[in-house]
Length: 346
Ligand SMILES: [Zn+2]
Image (cartoon, rainbow, N blue to C red; front, side, top):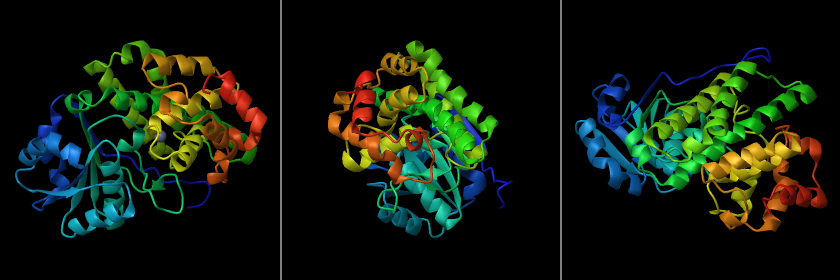
């Protein structure tokens, strides 16, 4: 491909509704044919949905337990899929990422069955796998189909739903960073993909009070918005509309403070600060996050102030080719301290 063209890859179908998990067999039939269906899932998820999935797939399910989002698990799923036509990833994050990459590497179909709505990987062409040469997502293919059972997702812990809201508001700063990169470096910018991502962020910004009660209709809005941002990445042909400086900040914290805070929670904190750095309305972001009960301070995530400062100073170094407001601002220690404290993050 030359610089004037790019490939858009999108999911083919989405089934969303209360109780749709029982329709999984029919949903994957065109890919699975008569063969076994490899189902990648963590142990907690298996205990919750195994019976429904087994009966939906009519005894054709081959379960593989995913213990971590790493290459060893990707290989395990690939091996289990040696004579399968499709892989189904059932879970909140790691099983979807592992299944997506395993299917991509085997060139077979992948179906995503999210059991929570904590980030936009459920529909995106990207997989977050640990132990690679970089701490950010790897390009794979988007799922062929996404089956989102609102009843199952509704019963997930509220913290996961709030984290999904954090990943959604981050599109505000991601899109601004994309526009900045377009102006400063001439990088391709697609206004359609950008607007689609912004619409998803606005589901949280404009509806945060209702969303924060997490009724079933709110959960459905949240899931649809997350699916849509993954589609925006597919249209853009890159993660640009979904991931800017706030994601680099979150990825940096993954490295220096592993296990503290969820992806969307860290992105939410990053969005508050990057919005201020971009001279945007950061208070609107903070208030929306508060309304959905997502964290707005480092201490709520048990992350030290010093790590926040370090992340602001160094986050852009983990992906130097991605031009963002952090590349432009080049924050030193006093400026980082001022940014984090003036926004109340530390
Ligand atoms: Zn994200």
